[in-house]
Length: 588
Image (cartoon, rainbow, N blue to C red; front, side, top):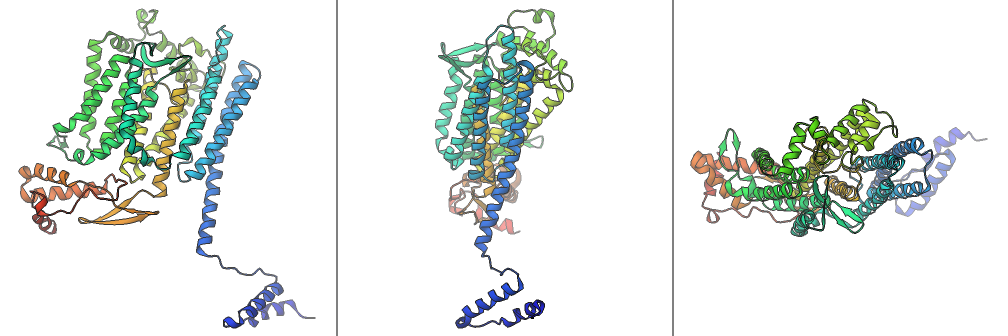
């Protein structure tokens, strides 16, 4: 009887490399050898198959990671809703179960679309938005049941669940049909017109509606809407395109004063226009929140486009001057400032309209909640007017406590940070400005509403994103989140053009399937900057200043999707500035 160990050691030795004529015989010997040893045959995996397998493995891992985060958000939201309903009603009604299953199903659809269409986007952003929306629905429904116990019929929680379904549906359509966010740049002026029209709508008699002293709503039949929530999105797109097209002239500063390079007078036109629009919103609609959010968003994007700190100082001073003038001229706004400065005045507290009763009750609710709250469904949030919209932050503070409020702010901070990280990673200039503008708008909206409730600034009429009651706010902020995810995915996929520079020669670098070059300072901007430096620095100083400016510009430039550079062929005939001397100075 043959020893299997001997056979296994001899079998591989019987296989010898041979030419192509004996290839089939060698394969048979290899198969017999593998069968005799009981070991599998060795197969060669091609590089393309290996890449496909790794890609499939990564997609599965991404899907599992997103699914885990979404499941956690849905289960936590369900637990809060169940705990609240058991306390205030004893069971969960059937209509809430049906709408809840619909919302959960749409969340799964959006998750699958994100994993398929935007696989490189941030995994945590969508579950955070779902969790915030669920918390808002739970608290709004809880306030509904207290209103019902007081004899007032209210179903705002059910309507919020319907709006949540609409928001998820619109988000899914946006993921499917918005293949490239850069296409929004082509309709920038249409976005400007739509954004301004939405801002003007509440000022139209018969269409606008005054609620709690602020005329920021429009009423159409049985529906009401806050158009400023959508206006910020359209204006962010326009601002991004406008500043991107004019970034070269903005980068050329004026004189240096106190170690800060200040802009030229001709660059103040766009800022002045936005300031006038913000002041008109403040005066006509009596709302500081929208005015501050609009102006701050533009100034923030202006800083990103120009990298000039002077714009931040100028913007802050301009807005403070506008607020002081409004306080002196317009009684309605002056009353809000008076309430902010003296909220606990007995005379203001006892006023039937335009007093401090609302904000004081909100502060009492926050104080009653303490660190950990008194429990969902155990408080009395309806004592505060507009507890489910303007003051839902105070309502949550009463029932869930200070710790939960801090967690909410951390979740908002994560959304804002995701926007700024996407802006830093994406190499396309329009994408940088759009992502940063959306992040700025979210940050200032949270600051204005939380700051108003906690007496940091005068009370405003903006809503808390994702949580406060209202379909317009919920849908607009979900669109904002999806736009950030689209830009973040583009930044990590790497289909946006990038470039390396060697002197003045452009060296395109292939990224993904695209090969193109970035845009940097235009010839006109170089000439303007050189002329500005001539008188102060002399010829060689001007050469070095321009050289340093271009080096700085190329290191942090905002690139375009265009394949043509903004720097043409430089020669002495195309410029009054001696570029031949410039080259010699650079070599020196």
